[in-house]
Image 1 (cartoon, one colour):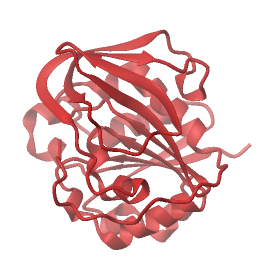
Image 2 (tube, rainbow, N blue to C red):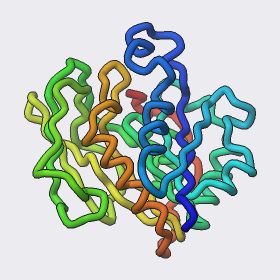
Image 3 (cartoon, one colour):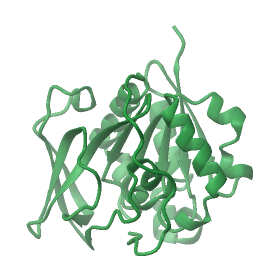
Image 4 (tube, helix red, strand yellow):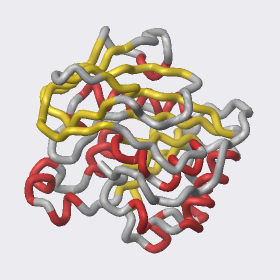
Length: 244
């Protein structure tokens, strides 16, 4: 049986320029995730970063990718519109996409969601997050308890300007009382998209077993193409987007 081929994409900017982040992820966030995925039966992960030629997302790489993971924050506007359009079309054709944390403001997520905002409340005080599992029978929630607790994390709060998810798997609660739709599933064309909120770079989120389990579950879910729903839009301008 062939393995699910995964490409983990990361800007790889924080880890090179911020000593705090580098101490947590010395090889980069992408490697922390890919290394875990490569321990999972049936998965084979590779990595790509923003400063690679064609952002590491050449036709050859995309043609060999069943599921693409996307982590972006500082440099959304540096991603080529041409590459975004290629990725968008691959999702329409059946490639899975998992968008992590600040990737809500990425060009590719906004292109697939058909919105130029993606705005939300945020506060980076290192407070507790409790991610409640509201669809425990969903494949992405496999093996989880009632909730995942993250000791220190950046707060994201509603209103989150995204289309209503086809399926909502997780809702987060923070110490300040805010809540957030933190696990959102969509179908776009023949492809599946999963947005998963945790992952601020100054905390060791991608070393937490439950978070990595959700990502691995998400890969399995997103790799199974079905569908079809029409995409709501193409690449939207970056004006008025809060980049958290």
